[in-house]
Length: 162
Image (cartoon, rainbow, N blue to C red; front, side, top):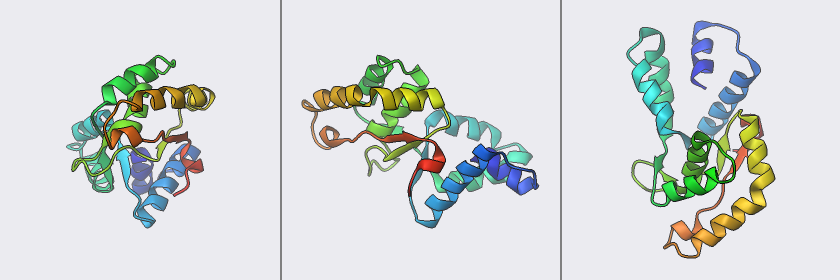
């Protein structure tokens, strides 16, 4: 999304992935749907914020997109997702989508994960029944609201309905 916003501001041609990402950004903005980024992305953007080429775009993006923060049970769920063959980074993203919150702690999890990472999408889709079973077993011993945290959809941005 950020690269697409930058190219748009500079009048450069966007590739399909950037167009799809910006379309999701626009659709979510138009409907006041909350968007989140992972903490590692926020860290990279903070480092680039001082560069003249990026600062305005990063501030525009950051004003509209929140940082998903690990909530209770995030680490346990990330470890279990790693057992399903996800990279540690992908497992963390997926765990944030289930056991993540915003700065005020007002939400738990997200409905969707937008990604262009086809192996992650395929693994999530193929392993969905086993992942759901593992989460259900884990949730039996968790207090509310954690016992009700749903699994997100994991899709390319153009397939996410807002």
